[in-house]
Length: 249
Image (cartoon, rainbow, N blue to C red; front, top):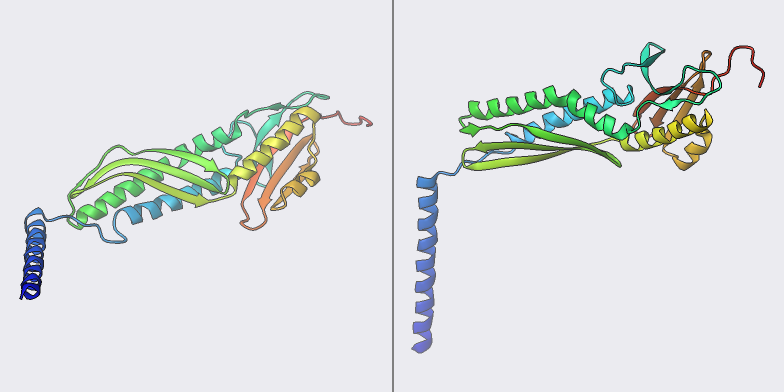
């Protein structure tokens, strides 16, 4: 009899607990009415849009050595290549024009994609409002950082969607731009010190890259770095240790 009473008591406790849980859930859903964002709405759409802008920006700046509009360029096959090292004198090695190439790429990429990032954010908010969400937005602040194998974009965008508060978004794009900037920096060091760079030796250290060097008639050297798998190209020009016409080495 005692065992039977114990079982009845346990069943009664389970029933009471179940009733309490159901009551709490009913109160929560009927009165609190939480707001949800379904998959594909808001954050995901925003991140995908930003990633497209990031990848397009990277592709554009790679061909310009990290500059949106460079002041000093060399015309080559219909393109304007940025001079990263230059001297207008004979018998002298060049002076590096951009001491911190990585920082320059980061900063210019931020400026280049700013209109697109803002447009992605505004479009995401408009889409949520059209679906009936109560949305409050804040100022969009972000930072771009190129890293080995990727470009990372950290976005601070304080946003409230119903009862959900959103603040930070991280977007990454797979790109070898970090390595290309580091290789270019090494080439510039050789150009400024010796007037030339041995790209054949460099390709032994960086087997994932083709490094093309083309000497032009007026003393300019064109460098083109290409990733063998992804096809990304980083291009720039240098003019260093130039000898006058007719000079015999």
